[in-house]
Image (cartoon, rainbow, N blue to C red; front, side, top):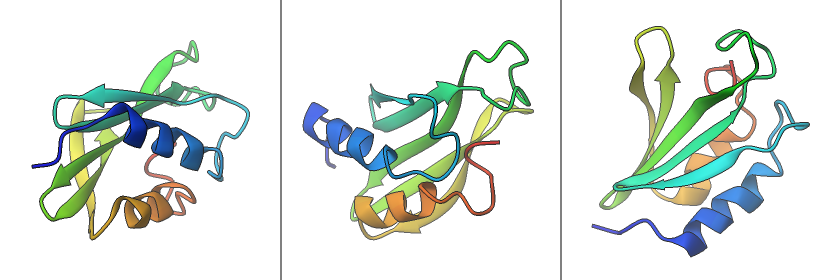
Length: 104
């Protein structure tokens, strides 16, 4: 299994600059034991009325696929959204967030 690393974390950070939603905040990529967690200030205040940081996405490498999760904030759990063949493919789903599941 591939281990999360700082270089790949920076790649995700650079990709997040191309996102569609909430471009005026700065998301943070956190290296987790088994992947990368993205958190961002809650601009919509739908999840955190004070605008504090909320979980946006969890990217896990599940040999040979990437697993993209969104946060079910009501249940405080991660939900699998997509299984992709590469990190780039996972980011292409996350960045536009057409279903508005990642940036609620």
